[in-house]
Image (cartoon, rainbow, N blue to C red; front, side, top):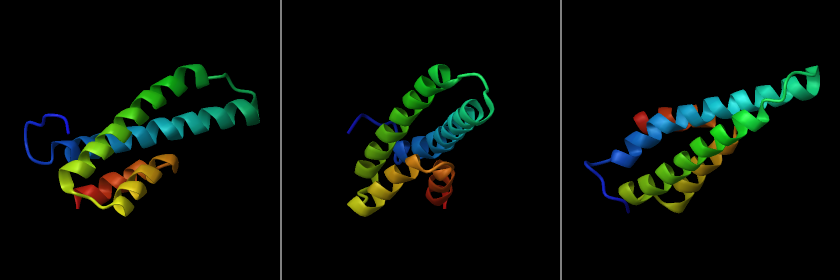
Amino acid sequence: MLATAGRRTWTRALCKVAPIEATTYLVLVIGTVARIGFGGPNLSPILGPIHGAIFLCYFACAIEAKAENDWDLRRTVSILFAAVIPLGGFFVAERLIR
């Protein structure tokens, strides 16, 4: 595990990154639908790498939060799976805040 400054540092980071990841994913999906369905501009070359970088941050935070909180495999996989569902990151952040 990477060095942390305090308890549950990675869990807090995951709570902050999850909604950002969900938002970028939703914008990417909307941009793709607009391009394919309505002939809009191709924003994927711009939005794709942005979302990809944020997704990697989400993934890293989830793995580190697993180690930090001793989560079981089922919880970790469900948190990682939420990232492939549009708006799933919002549900992850809400559940972790509780």
